[in-house]
Amino acid sequence: PDNVLVNGKNQITIRVADSAASGGFLEAPRICEMSVCEKSYNRFLLITGGSGFFILFIGIYHLFLFLGNRNDRAILYFGIGTIFHALTFLGFERMLYFFSEVFLVHFYTMNLSYCFSCILAVIFIHSFLEKKINRVSKFLLIFFGLSTISSLFAGISIDYRSIHSRYV
Image (cartoon, rainbow, N blue to C red; front, top):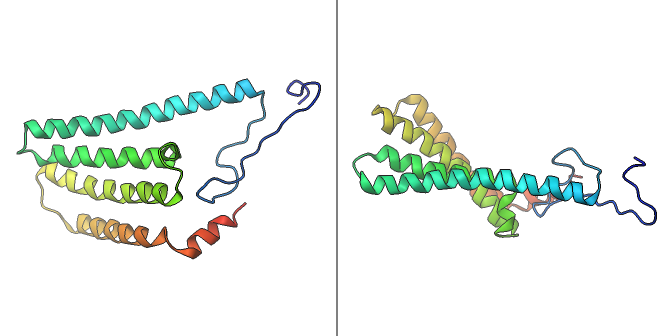
């Protein structure tokens, strides 16, 4: 668009891959003035980071609640599950790269947190409702347990990295 271009040199920056070697656009590309793009990105960081750390705070808060009432294990499961959910959310939104730029740290944190949060959600529901674990719950626990084990091996797989590095 003519209103975006200025006289002289114009710079267009396109991100085609991240450190996870996943290429392509994760969101719709934006063409705008640098200040407008920076403002939009800062808003994304504020909303996403704020939401993720709010979820993390809720999980830590429930851990402190459990210290006051150790008989109610549902509070413990909810607190730990919420912390894992926050790590999953922050990983999905690629916010974990602010803490470590290493792909495997991001991969394991996000994927294992997802599996653990699902396992803890099942355990929490049964603990909160004081019900025995039924067949469906056993199936879910086995499924997410196997998902956890497969996640341990997927991050170090050469095939996994090579497939994603060729996606552009």
